[in-house]
Length: 337
Image: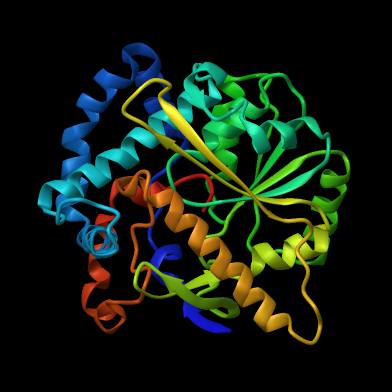
């Protein structure tokens, strides 16, 4: 098991205040996505210049993506800025999904194969996603006909703020955001009850929990040419819930429909044998990392982990700690922290 110091992302300040989220939502509704992106570009550029740690983490990831053949051209200064702009665009898409402006007609894959079958079974499920593209959009689309409710697990304190905005713009939303610092027995029991009622539990599986030093909460697996720490919590929860587990990503495309989903069966259920528990957790985390890489190949600039994911700069943390006050727009992060 890994012993991973997760301050790299958890200690970064969050700027996703309710007021900021609300203002962004109103700008989007007044001017639409294209004009909003133009208005946001100088703000994003400021954060790109001032967010030294985030810019460096972006470049480290983009370089790995290029070396693994996920990108055709070697990343440049402009590529990094476009990475940040893609994040800003995902925030607007998030708001649009919650206000009901994005529906099934905007998403390719909603009625295809396994995703459609999973929606219609009536069974609860655990859905593993990540900080890739905009999985929030799928939650809105999946609940258009109120077939089931969705509970989203968050590690950040933004849950209440986002819930407030969701309720203001979408009174009938069946999406609930729940902040959890850790998944203990009481949390698992609550989630089990929701799964029994047919809910989907959605959580990111590409970021360690925010515990400072999260001892034995991660395993190191192969990802984009190096070892990286991935959390084991999702698989422990999956084993406890005894329900189907799926992998899901949703990316913005440059064509119509505007979005595309990747939905894969992961396990049913997750099984952790007592004797080989560590090996099983390692295998599940590696399975997730391989699915994540497959999804990244479709949109490498849409992965939004703006921190030292591989620990490449761990020896320089103290020297650059002052830069965290200049946290980029990415620090508000996705609701799936």
